[in-house]
Structure formats: C-alpha cells, structure tokens
Image (cartoon, rainbow, N blue to C red; front, side, top):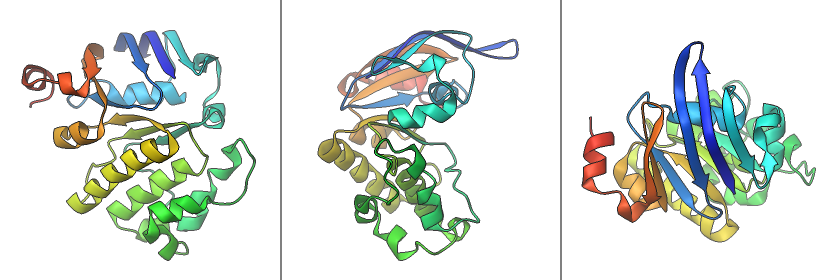
Length: 231
C-alpha cells in the first residue's frame, strides 16, 4: 500500500533519515519503533508532507506522494494522528471533527455515525471545547478527527503517550476493530512494547535515522529489544 525507497531527509546540514526502505502492507498494523530521537516522527512528517525530503521515493497505492503537497495527501485516504494530539482547544468536539470533512472523497458533510459508536464520550461532549477534555478524551478526539475523512491508511504517532491505562487498552481494541471491520492499514509509532506486541502485525526498528530491522512482530526478539529499545 505504502512503499518507501531510499528516503533521505535533512534538517539543515544534519542528516536525519538515511536511505530508508520500508514497505507497509495493506490490512496490517506496522509498529515503527526505536528510542527517542531516532527519526520516527520525522518519518511520519515526511509521509504527510510536513517535512521535505532530500531524495527517495514514496508511493501510496501507486501515487507518487513526494510530488503532492501536504494538503492533498489526506484526500488520498491518509489519516494522521500527530504526536501530542494537536486538537484545537478552543473549538468544540463537533467542530474539531468537522474539520476533516472537506477532505472526504465522497464530499459528505456529515460526521460518520460509527465515530460516535467507537467513542461514545465524544457524542456526550460534542458541544464541549476540546481543551476542556481529559488527555485520554483528547486522544479519542484526535483519532476520531482522522477517521472522519474515511481513510484507508491511518497513521498514529505515539497515541498512548500520557494516557491512562484503561484508555490505552481501549485504543488498542479500537485499532484492531478498525482493521478487522473496516480493513484499515495502520502505521503505529509506539514505544510501549506490550502495546506494540498486542496490536501490531509487523515491526520496523529505527536507530539514528537508519532502518535496523523489520519483520513479523513474532520475530521481534529480546536481542533486538535490548539493542534498540531498552534505555
């Protein structure tokens, strides 16, 4: 579904991503993992067009992403939940959700009913400002906002960061439900190993901007965990 080949990215003269080759298969959840500062969020920014790439190719369902401006990528069916949620705190829950509607390919202007079925708290609080929600509720809102555009690929950048355990478990259940019921493909940036093992089908390990290992989640052994994940 999404193929990345020989991707290089720079911040000024600092080389941050080095010749990355990663494929994300349709219908699977791939966990992009590694310690802080190894380039995980940078990679997501490149996929979404928020950061420029120096060289390489990114193709999504045959479309050359590198040639598309950021604002057109959501319209291809890529939903993005950034690190830190980045909801609009002064807008209501409903207004936050409606922001994604113009990117829908079917031009619908109605919030899909299934979002409130996934996250009942959002329907209960649809008139409340986003900034008044708890951290876990804001994360649910951020995921709901990404789902509004009816994506085929959902990118989640550390969705469990700073979230209470019961909501973390619920988010894991929802990710699997979206894949099983809707056929979504998921890219999950995650540092919590138990959560990644529970939710992910495959893993990709980054270290200092380089891909060190990738494969089925069952192949993520303790040797790789010690070398690339354990602080």
